[in-house]
Length: 355
Ligand SMILES: [Mn+2]
Image 1 (tube, helix red, strand yellow):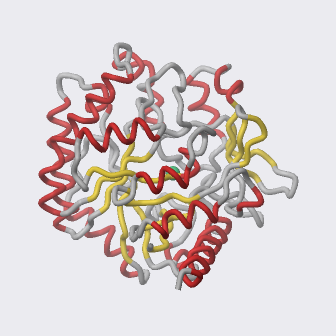
Image 2 (cartoon, rainbow, N blue to C red):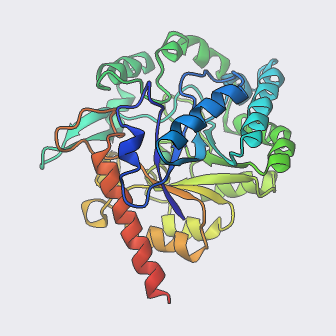
């Protein structure tokens, strides 16, 4: 595995690349062109500029998170082929720039959903949290507002203001889309992009729906073992793979995380490793990465990745806000750095224990 951190680019991130590369073992970032909109072609010049920014700081790009998929593709509207053509052109440009991992998601309208961005824990740290009742009691527009007002002046991925203006229109295009239709649209997209992925050896890694259930009545499909298996079999190409995000699959307590990792051996191209603490099945908060702070056995998760021969990038996922840091919620430097070192420690112990 390669330890990495997510980075949004110097105009958007509150964390500096130079600081990221001071974290032990981190020389790669997972990054994106944060100012592009879904459907827009990424030019080679823009990709080269991003690569240079990272290499000038002493590191490299380990993968892209995300190249966002336009809603026309997810909803399968009449103009989807135009947007898929653009997506293919972006993949081609990434391939020519020697980038071989692309994380994306297929969630309608919303990216991840949380009811709180700064729930205070007993030690004074703040974390993202989810309460099912709180989410069910508000309108989608209100969630946009609350996320905008609580993100410390940053723009949260998936919650860009231009999406909020279109939220009603977006709901409209999904009104006849059920899970089956969404699944078909995903397969259609994957079949069309597989040739370019094969040509440039680009591994596509779909991110799970977060949380792993339907929110605001919208369909959600990347939620459990059965559905992932169906997706991997429908387009049976190694370049059609997954991002194993423990914090997202873990929202559904029926998902057996180490078992899923073993089940999808060879098709996991990217891993997000983080812990959640459940206060009840309907309420969780994003604990620190340590097993004892949350509900997951992080040793078993890392062990499953190690034992299945995982060689891709891992990144610590959302961190707590600690030590008075002011940053994009979930994406401060300090707690993610602690998470990276903790996961590296688990990995080293498991690796040496196996020799
Ligand atoms: Mn994730």
